[in-house]
Image (cartoon, rainbow, N blue to C red; front, side, top):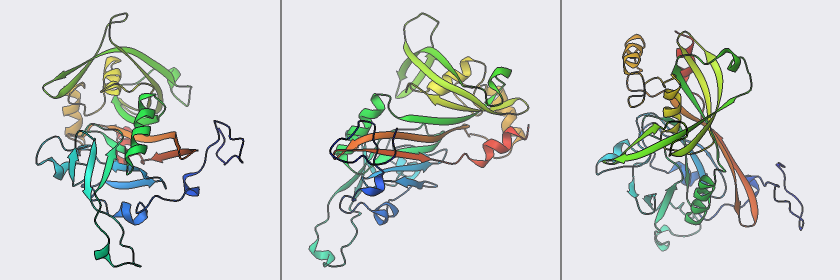
Length: 300
C-alpha cells in the first residue's frame, strides 16, 4: 500500500495520505489534547490532524465509568454519555488571542470512545473528537479493518515449532458469550457446536522458565477472546482472575512483589485506514511493552 499522496485526478483506492498534510479542525490542536482531564497514569500516545488519538491506559483503570463515583478511576475525569459513548468535556477550546475570550461563547465538546479494554488490561485506547468521524471509525472496527496487536505473558510453553521467529499460527475456536448481571462471561464451545467464531494469530516472542511471552493478533473481536483462547490451550494469562490458573496466580504474586491483581495482557499496537474529506488517512500507534513483561519472563 502506498504511503504517499497520489496526484489528482486519478486516485487509487489504496493510496494513503499522511495525516500531517491535512489542516486541523477548529480548536483541535496539540494544546487541546494537552488540556484533556486524563485519568491517573493515562498518557497521550499519538493524535492526528482530524481529531483521532491513541491514549495509554494503565492496568486498573476503566475505559469509561460504569456507575456514579467511577470517574476517579476512569480513562478521563469527566462524565460519560452512555448513549453517545463519549466523554463530556465541557469546553476545552483554545483561547483566540486576537479576540476577547468573553466574546467567544463556550461550546460543548465531547470525546468519543472508539474501543474498550477490560480494566485489568493495559495499553492503547482510541478516541475521537469528531462525532461523524468517530462513527466512521467504529464501522471500521465492525468490518474487522482495524489491525490490533497484544502482548500476553502466559503460564506454560507452546511447541518448539513456534519459537525462534517461526511463522505465526492461527487459533480458531467457537465461543459462547453470556451477559450475567452486567458482567460478560465467555466460554469455548465444543468443536462443531453453535457459537461465534474467534480467530487469533499467535507468535512466541520469548520463553522463560514456566512462562512465555506471546504476540496475539485478534482477527475477530469477541469479548474476552484472547483470555479464553489462551486458557483453552493450557496457556492461561498470568494474573487472569476469571479464566486463569488461580493457584499459579497466587504463587506468582507471592514470588514477584507488585504483580498481585495485574493481568499481564497489554494492547501493544493498532493501525487502520479511514476515509475523510475525500482522502484516505492512515492512523497508527504503539504503546511500549511494560518493563515488567520482559523482566518477568526472564526472571523465572
